[in-house]
View 1 (cartoon, rainbow, N blue to C red):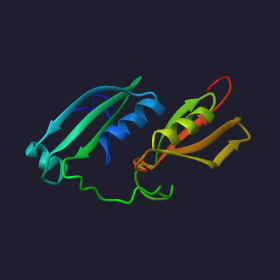
View 2: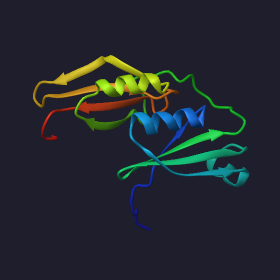
View 3: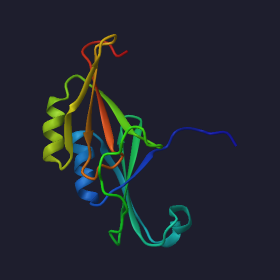
Length: 149
C-alpha cells in the first residue's frame, strides 16, 4: 500500500488547555476537535490508561496534543540539544518575531532571543521559541522581509 499523505505530528503535553492556548494564541492554530480514549489504543500508545487527543490545524499542518488522564508523563520539559536523534523543531515563516516573543511568554512558553542567527547569503534570521512543556522542544521562526527563499 502506498503512502497517501502526511497526517499530523503528535505532542505529549502536561496541561491540555495551557498547551492549546499556546498553539492557538501564539502560533495561530485552530482547534479542530477533541476526543477522549480509554484503553482501546493501549497497544498503539504502548501504555495503559485514558488520554485526551486534541487536533489543531494551521493551513495544511496538523498538530495533535495528547494529555494523559493520570497526568503521568516522562521528561523534564527542557530544550533538547539539536544534535539528539529525532524531531528537533517545527518551523514557521514570519515577518517579525518580536510579537511572538511577547505572546509566547504570556502563554506560558518561552522566547529564546539569544538563539537568533542571521544567514548572510539569504538574509534569513532563525530564532527559537519553546512551548509550555518544551514539547517538540524548539519551534523555529524564519524571520524574513520579502520573498521566501
